[in-house]
Amino acid sequence: MLNAAIRSGGTYLYRDLCKFNYSTAISVCRQFNTTQGQFQKLAQFCSKSILRSFNNKSVTHNTYVKTNKIIMPEEQKPQVVFVLGGPGAGKGTQCSKIVERFQFVHLSAGDLLREERAREGSEYGTLIESYIRDGKIVPVEVTCSLLENAMQNSGKTKFLIDGFPRNQDNLDGWTRQMSDKVDFLFVLFFNCPEDKCVERCLARGQAGSGRSDDNLESLKKRIQTYNNDSLPIIKHYEQIGKVQQIDANPSADEVFKNVEKVFVDAGFQ
Ligand SMILES: Nc1ncnc2c1ncn2[C@@H]1O[C@H](COP(=O)(O)OP(=O)(O)OP(=O)(O)O)[C@@H](O)[C@H]1O
Ligand SMILES: Nc1ccn([C@@H]2O[C@H](COP(=O)(O)O)[C@@H](O)[C@H]2O)c(=O)n1
Image 1 (tube, helix red, strand yellow):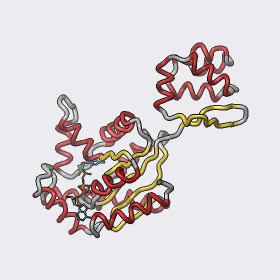
Image 2 (cartoon, helix red, strand yellow):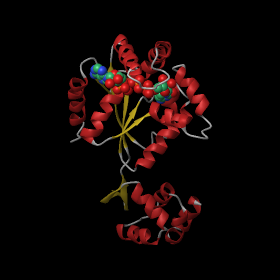
Image 3 (cartoon, protein in one colour):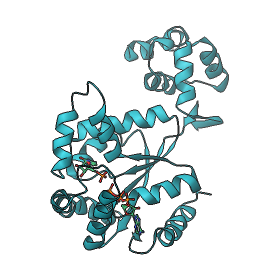
Image 4 (cartoon, protein in one colour):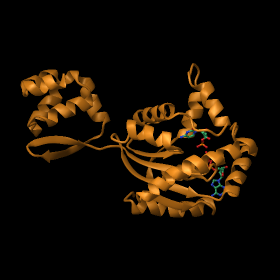
């Protein structure tokens, strides 16, 4: 259909663009000399669903990118920060503070998996429970789809993705499914000694977290998974200069002072 549109050289465009999804519509427009005026005409002509997609995709208003003679609205991709660190390092605690201070959306991969596990009729409930109890990493197809849906449903554009990517399978799946759709900023890495991680998770369990993995047996497995599978991913991002490391040992408020500095230095107000 795209090729037919391109061959027809423009006349086809206004009539039939409404049948395309957003990405195809943009792609078609880019291949014609679509002026700002034509684009507006197109927008008027297109079906409501396309217009809704344009709005949802946060087309930056009044911003037009000029590439040769083609003038198109620039699409702002969602910005993503990955938040990593050992179990109990304080990722969730710090994410709540970042949300409050910088208005990011916090998406915890672990929370999304627990929600999916609890969802009536979920085909993945049993699988997720066995992975969580054993401290193993759920196949990326499940986790990445939960993350993508949550991002889309939020209607927002700044995301903290907490507890992901946790292993090579997570990273590969994200690269396949999401890397072209987002603007990845950096990894926020909470570095915390192992004994402190264990102490915090056990205290969280004793305080009534209700988590089936806040016990010593699961924790040993989670720490093993972290050391074997997650640390190499953090090292990978370090090698490409994409890690912001934070000492997670001090009190939560002290830790946040350093976190805040990272975000301010990255241009957030
Ligand atoms: N800096 C801190 N000092 C002391 N306790 C902390 C600190 N940060 C978090 N905690 C406590 O430690 C526990 C674990 O914190 P949190 O849930 O934020 O960790 P997490 O890294 O998200 O854990 P997980 O990966 O297991 O989900 C919580 O009970 C929290 O209140
Ligand atoms: N990318 C991920 C993240 C988490 N899991 C599973 O959930 C457990 C709990 O994660 P928390 O971040 O809430 O501690 C974790 O031990 C894994 O079993 C996952 O599979 N993939």
